[in-house]
Figure 1: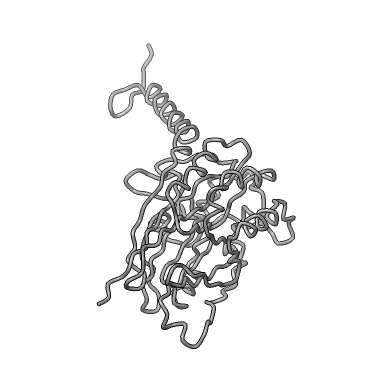
Figure 2: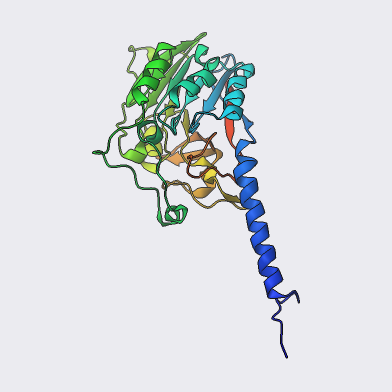
Length: 315
């Protein structure tokens, strides 16, 4: 005489386990083959410009993680020029392969004709390596040792961006004029590598503070120490990436990880960062790509972000 174990629902346990495995496999297949290529543009509007200023459209790109042969990603990046941005802000991790600079530049070619600024991420310097994904639950991923070879052609990418007119904000600041307004930028090298060295904002003339202007801070990884010194320094807007929005999220809950010390509920989207009595808009992009060793996304579609800045109230 034999017996069959059943689950609480009354279904045989073997059948329930099989259903669970099938569901998990289907979910993984969707995350790997479908959602990671469901590119979208998230649009946000922020009333932070000086009164009377014309609207400014900023296209925020992050975490492209380009690999040769990614045609759908390249085509989509190429199409973003149709958004007619006034400025492109690139917050790093553009590469995921030694031979990715050419495909990256080809994909970005129309956008390289638009004024832009950029900072690097760790995957602009170092090739990604295969890791146990459960390691991320123990804390942020371990940054490569400084003694390791900088084995991605980041210098070629930097040179191409600079030749196109994009401004390198790696631990430096610079002002750019737009119409009748000035944008003061400050940026840092990747905080995930502990390379960030805050440069404050360009001092300008003795009357520069009286001219219409806005202050924008840019970093790859949104560590809290970085957001604090950006805020204390007078930023009006902060832009970052790195988190991949959590990459694999729980529907209705959100990200489980941010891969830094940023609270997970801030891993994607537009929030306010408060420090020393100031509150500054922070936009964290969920990013466009993934490491080639973890090509999955779930409940976290890849994105570019179009920020439309409008004048604040004159009151």
